[in-house]
Length: 564
Image (cartoon, rainbow, N blue to C red; front, side, top):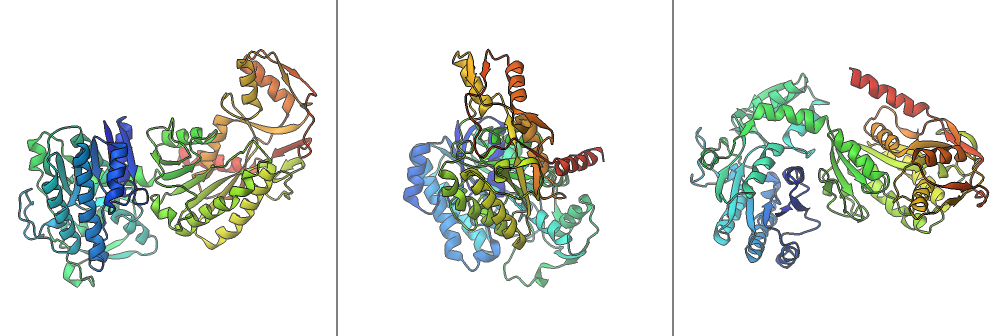
């Protein structure tokens, strides 16, 4: 089964992708940048090319207030866009799941609205979603229409996160007391949506977390669970300055879920508790170069720790299905790229071309793209940016390296990385972003697909060679196993107490010869080193290693946190 998700970078679409991945179901998630649903020709071509068995249509214009001013745009997305999606589904024989809303109803009374209750939307947004339903009913026979209410999930602009952000600087908040409904956690809803599309139980459903509360009750519970002392002051809807009518009653009957044998979603307080522990404690992390030499191990570390991971890569072959694909190129130049890719909490920027070809022209050629991407992420509101540096920024140096060691790079790779570090350290002062520059040293790995000396020895042994041409091996370096390196990158990136330049190192100098001989022994390689076959490069110092003070400080703080 193949599933296409529109609106994949939104709070619900993101969690639908995660749930499909957890189930091992093939999927493709697209955002508005990759597929403009208002363009009929592009939608049809995209669907014919991918040919999904089912489409979960999460893409929508959802700004209720702005919709009153942009009626035409709202209808173009929610109605015309839905028509394009439905027609494309019909053409390829795919079933369609359309996300709708409690806003199609009048909001009158205090009873739960049944699926066949008369529709009477009170605002432009509700009108557009109702007309979107009618389009699906007109075109499709294999469809699910799922109405939901009061969504909250991984998006930083959802109701829960907005209140938590407000509480950082305010101890009093005014909230309407006469609007009643059921908060709905996107993680719980996404599980139901994935259950639905694996059946032929077509029709209209209402789905929200169990229980009903007022907006005041919801706000108070958010602050209670977060241990925040905030006074929530009740007001009536008519006292609000907004001109948009919102339903006072958003209760939805779940009888059709019961009838068709689907489990109801958990109680809303339980859902809120899980959200505040799972989605806020655990972060949304973008890893660029996430399928590279180091990136794939960093990604696994993050996923194993329970974080939500989005990968940006030139290819996605072999991607961990627990992760999500970045919806657009990080080098698109888009100023709002931070918003477009779903507003991650942390970006670990590993992506780099020709990292092992130190004088490749690609280093300087791509430098500005890296800087523009990082600066646009920071200006968009990124809280934490963690970039990979290298000992090659320093150039020729003898002895220990700390963050104040002067840099005089002697290769194109070192020059580019040094320039990027200087530029970002300067520009980060203008943004509320914690910048980590993690300086890497000599990496040890038995990955035969790598490009460093250890990978080349693995390749030579596999090719049946007995001798391996080598340098004098006298140089002193700072060596670290790649799995430990990935762990330290994650630990350093996911904290904000220690920032700036941090050496990801052991702080212990060791000769190249001794480490290589140890590698040959540990991996039982039938190789003998031919010393002196290659001269030392002009920019290779007799000895350079990192000062490990800051990484030890970070590890110490991390251990204290775990113990607490």
